[in-house]
Image 1 (cartoon, one colour):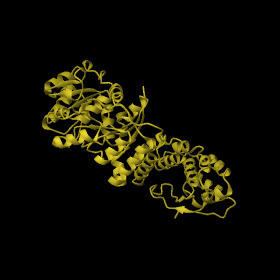
Image 2 (cartoon, one colour):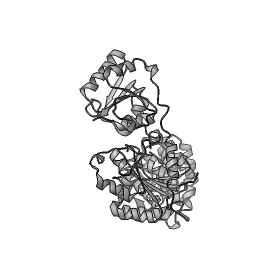
Image 3 (tube, one colour):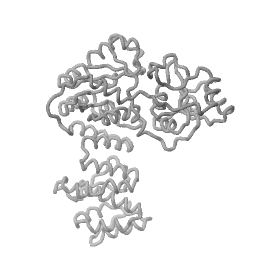
Image 4 (cartoon, one colour):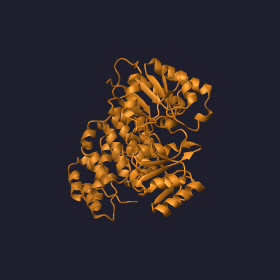
Length: 469
């Protein structure tokens, strides 16, 4: 199979729908697939900046395919023409959203003309007749594998849908007549709405998921997440379930409360989905049918994408969204796995989260690695830069030299882990210049005897005495 370079519109925020919805599957198939965080890029750069960045990225890397999700693609007709001229095939995937009910011939013409192929997850007859290709099952299990909430409750039956009197009555009957523990979440329920990690964590730990229709259409988010998790799922009767899955597979359905109760009374007769459409096969088939147009050499580590990932990572970190920042670091590692600044960034994030063991693991050997990347003029200079996003997590300012930053974080981690002798051993291995700078920035914890010992080891032979303000 030919390996393709593919850019996929995916958020780098684990709490957003669509996180890792396709790139892991494509990479497992042997393609060099990288996420393109469109919404975050537009927020960071604006429309013009996004267009310039995307053109530069495609020009550098020459991906055979760019996969986007209109109307949230923010690409002008002129930009699409320029990218296609470079040889990149642009594929649009549209899902049922609040936009699609008002789409008409003008929107269909736009989708036909801007893109090389138009896929629809919900095969609306009007879209199909306008030239769209039905692709009912595009998401892979990776979209839920990396998202979770360890604090989510374990339930026998989970309901994630807006509250109605009928659903409340059904939940009460399940609890009273069958003795099954039911949890109800969503608009109108006492428990309220869920974040995406909480919803997936809840579904993951539930034995059975009840999925309801809204205005004769499935509550798709719950339906697909539960299916990808392989859960036993009872679905309220949908007039056209084949819109969502092939007719050869699907969950058990019910059209009345009595039928639902009867099904739940015999749990052994219910089973997990075992015949979901093979997402990998679907992508392999239609990618093979889309002839690539890019030729020639390409940059293995596209600088524009490295710049975008690092910028968004620091944007998240500046907002104290550390889990999102670490997710960006994962994407950063796909294009620049040996970048020492990536390790510095991860170490700072883990320090903010006070994951001290991981701080030591992430920074092992980092000081020596940075030594060949930091200019001599900046080595261990006592130039202090106030932290822009760490919220003074260490009670320290940051030096201009990242080596000093890493040393301070390692010493703090060793102190917090009670490894004072290891901390003093690292201090003994420092040059006098580095020790002097670190001592000037170290703020001892007066209530921690190990911190005080580290302070004395740093201040030895120097007239340094720094105490907290």
